[in-house]
Image (cartoon, rainbow, N blue to C red):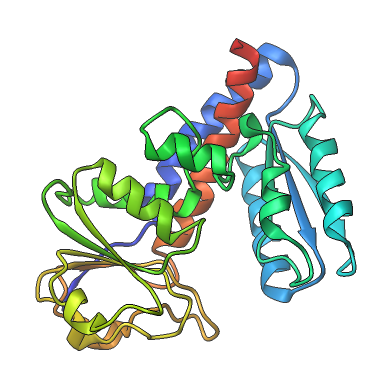
Length: 279
């Protein structure tokens, strides 16, 4: 049986520290760090995710402001609402729940988030700063992945990391964070030739493709570290977990990457509040 890498204890520790800093902020200012969550439409999974983030925010001593917009909202209307939140001094962090309906220009909506409130690390400003090692907010799931690797003592420097998926909020930033830690990084995607052979060379595999059990167990090198960043219908990840038991470490789904993602989001919201106060 392979060794599991659950993220629940790590997430609890991150949230506990963030909660203490949130309490200090409240004691100093008389108000709580505020995270605004914006959701367009009523996709059941997105509604569930937003509710979970709201609940975790409240438990950590943060204020949660919920903005629900109808599915027919236009790009222009969404951008206007996000800019309004960006200009609101009572709001410290903004989270746009994704994906948005197909008729909306998601990138335009992300770019409407003020960089100092981009606690989900989705803007081009945050990506550039993160890639160059500046003190910007990281994309939360990739940030949580790095924290997991550190928590379990995984050596990153000099290792071959294969990232499967190139989304701007998961695959690409995960690759940049691994590169910053001196891994040799290969990014694979839908046009990659000989994907199984490439994955077999990986010391660290990050599966972020969004397809249930896409990564086959036989692709995994014995002893490799496997980070499953997928979450699909039926509570299954992007890796065929049952057939990847020869991995050295592997994250479970659920209970692996997910808890650390939310923890990093809350941590960065509290950090945004303090940055504004200290500016």
